[in-house]
Length: 279
Image (cartoon, rainbow, N blue to C red; front, side, top):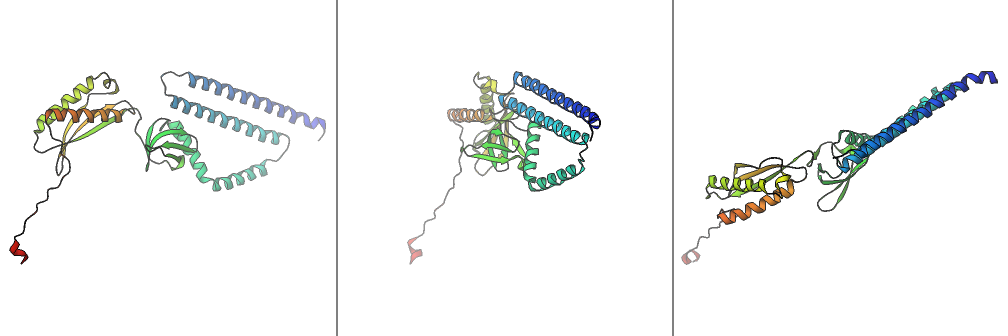
């Protein structure tokens, strides 16, 4: 190819390269602005902030890769290189890789959706099938969950089908109390309502509640007890300590009021035999 024939490709190539540089610069500029904005947001949990930062970095990386790849193909086409075999080879290679790494791709897509939809964040208490605990780390491929025994579970994001987030938005503390059949049920409910009202006014626990406690019952008639329930809406993650404190106060108040809280027991009747029956 003579020099005159190279003029047009060189101009086109220079234009493509210039536009590519501008595009990459714009992507980096927008990425930095988005990261600065995410880090400056007030009244947001640090775990959620980290999710936003991760998502912005992923989008910036994907956009840069797309611009660079498109520019490379355009440059090759401009200088007369037939990119059809290259595209076909890339398609075949991509198909082979996708077939061999289906689980990996599924995990990456699942992790991206978890971050975008904010299904759960670092610090949330969740349950995934038989695994339950606190989320310690989230990546595009896996979720790290630490259970109450200290065991760290690494769950592939592609395996997350149904997740129970126990600290999302708000939580609820449930305290079931067994009362003996001999007790006056109206009196028991009245005592529980007094406990609930005093608990809601407590300056140490009242701010953790999102509504007044509710006393419900009887819920069930068991073999040895009638079950009543105290239910209260709490701030996210506060339901366990609220439930523990409620149980403690209910037990102490019932002891003061002389209200019996029965426990499972069996009564065995032993029938004596006369001596003549052994002869």
